Length: 103
Picture (cartoon, one colour):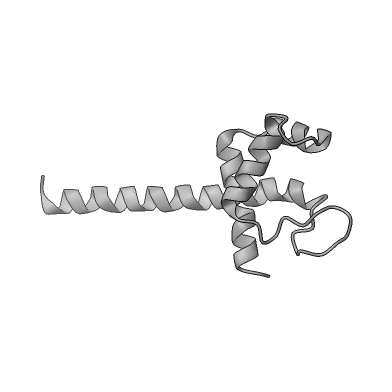
């Protein structure tokens, strides 16, 4: 394969992977808007626990436990049931990043 063709393919793969990462961040932000209706994403509020500062792994495990009815909370169970594994990973990644980069 000619060097120009290899470079064009490599550039296309890089651009595709970057756009995929951006799409994942957008999806995480959109899903986190649902979370924000109860869990304030600025870390404030009272009553409902903040999810800011939790790790991606902890958020993922919590959502999976709610989905499997291992953690008793009807509202969180219904919300977690509505999310695919990919969406759970996306929102957990997004919310965890908020905690490591306070706004």
